Image (cartoon, rainbow, N blue to C red; front, side, top):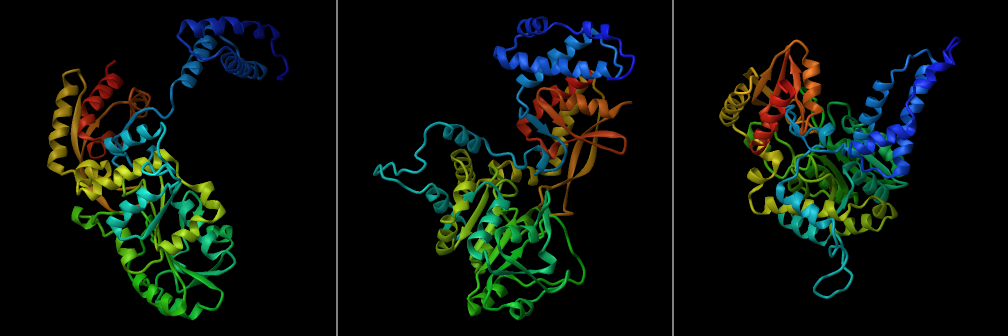
Length: 456
């Protein structure tokens, strides 16, 4: 405690009963015990401030306490609008799922026939539906769904290569994201990393030269979040599978993004697709469900039934497996592809495929709506990115509603804290709201949020 602290300052702290009464009058629905514990935490913080020389203001303390109560009662994962221009924004939850997928996930929150066959009332496998759908879409013999792609990679390596050597191109022994590094994953799985080739050029012959009786797998890792350009070469999946058949070594491929559509159609670089890797002979392919596939967070392991069965029997498989709501959302998303409607139903592809002229029309309507309430916005051309560790360096032309002001940080904060919250980006002294990453049906909410942040 700081010397000379006026002990009478502590008497300015409001009584806990006063704060409880204020919270109740404000509509708090918290039970008594957690409400009191929360308010005691607030008061403890105020005491700490007084102890280092702070001067309390009772009215301000009451306001802060009520704000803290409202913060606890308001869901943090409430609805927001992503106007950043990053289609697959990791910090904003990555892919938006389709309305049909969201409905399927909500329905699956109740009782579902997860591990029982409805026709016979006998025990069944929870992966049957996903396997059927992926077989039709990609040719995979079997599939297993776990929490995310990182989990898929760890599980596959643990089940197939623990105690064995795994050969990886030096250019693919990378950090995928969030500190998830291929060498660390291999060590965690119990496998031994063998790097071959160089950072920029690796050939099938390099894998062949490093193969011995302890080799458990060849691992390919798609560089989904960086580019190496210029004098480069990588052994193809087909080349490695040919070598693997001759040496009795399976090829495992981490594709990352999970694209099921040809990205070149949208003017983007080519992203390898799950079905292509399986057709090239990979034993197992691991992809994310919530990137370019456009579904809920998931790690999909697809490929040979023999290898999938081996992985599914590993003890970690139960610890990492996806829950029923994830499986329901993923199945609904895959059906969009089966029906040939992904481009008009899956939000990720709706955003990627949005035409600049359509974005221009929406921006003009949005500017007119907010102008009627006194908001002066401009229309500005810019570039969007795919994001989410997919198609690094690739951009799409876009159209934004541009807002000015003396304090853009404050305006951006007001938008983020609104209902719904709106996340944009600040560029060149303007706050940009990128319409590529806002669905057309959300334009009215976006307009209302802008008016509330600027005018009200």
